[in-house]
Image 1 (cartoon, rainbow over the protein chains, first blue to last red):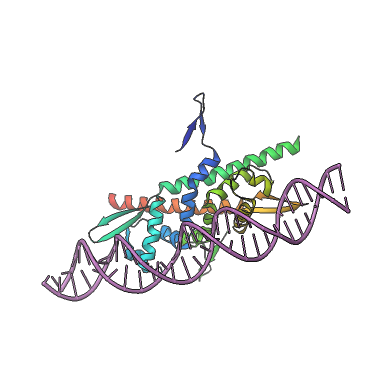
Image 2: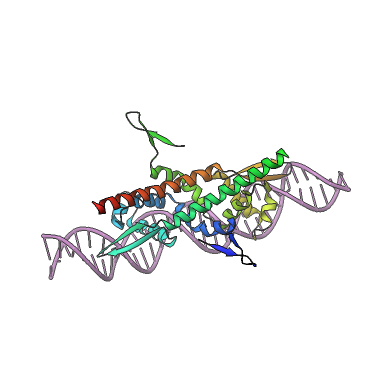
Length: 122
Length: 122
DNA sequence: TTAATGTGCAACTGTAAAGTTGCATTTCGG
DNA sequence: CCGAAATGCAACTTTACAGTTGCACATTAA
């Protein structure tokens, strides 16, 4: 979990901006229908081969392979070679990271609203 | 919140796949450093003008405008015309939607893990 | 060994996105 | 009214991406 340190050594939470910029590649990887479908399939638990993942996809195996590489580069998926085939499995850590980023946004927004409310009431 | 109905009329939660496909455009909008920075700025609560948002951005005002339109199309931002300027404000509902999608992924994954554990123990 | 299955790699096409420049338009202030 | 500030719109360049095709390589099964 990314953290920074102030000059005095005091610990503080990483800024929203930095956190979000770090998560942007994850969101980009999730921002495609085909890839999001692959994730939905893989997070059911199985470690499926490229051919198996291509089965329901209406596009070429090579296209699926490219999408899987995009997901792998974003750290959302891991690949394991097994004999002549290559199985892909879901990797949950980056998703958690993205989730925390969205939580941070909501939190920031809620704080802004409560500040506004306090200001109006004063 | 999207829901589907079975033939018998029983209510059930929307499938992970459909939920994620619906959220893909949101993720796509968040998958860019400039846009994510804009969101981080706007969710602090202020309703800022295009010029104000361009100030720290190292790119042209027109480029910022385009990004804001992308965010608006994804429903992440709303614009309000005020005289000669146009102020942009954060719109939290879609972020919540994306958040629920990520939660659903994590949940699905956890369920898969517990099924696996139960299987191993048996 | 042979044929079939599962992949990997490279080249190529078409399209969309990011960013720019130039100019017209609306609006506020003096 | 006039100039400056804030935008809007359109054309254009560059680059990235989704998808395809064609072919070579590895591996398993008969």
